[in-house]
Amino acid sequence: MSANTMDRLVYMANQIGKFFEAQKHDRAVPGIAKHIKDFWDPRMRARIEDHLAAGGEGLSPLVFEALKTLPPVKRDSIPSAHPTLNPPGPTAAHHDHH
Image (tube, rainbow, N blue to C red; front, side, top):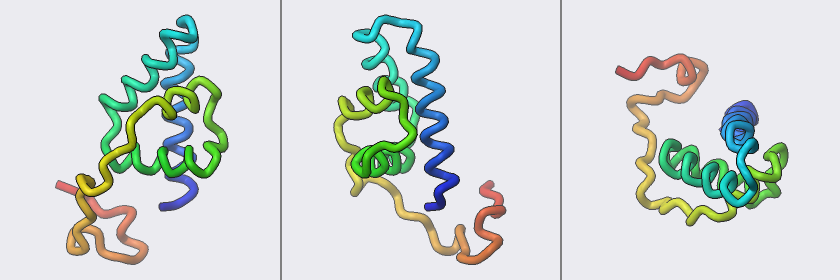
């Protein structure tokens, strides 16, 4: 995974945090956690979990706290990429999925 992908996930998580930060702390943290749990796919959650475990650089304090309340993603339930659908090399990033 590229650093850009992680930057994007951190940005997205922080945007969710901004939406909830107008609420009181005790409502914002579970609100952020629920949103990520409900709307992020397991791959995204696994990546942000790994980022959190590595220190969570760039995450706002509210988002950091919210992510810590989530149960770990079951890694064995994440489907692996299909090599035939995602060929290695420069075209992989531009490959259309239909």
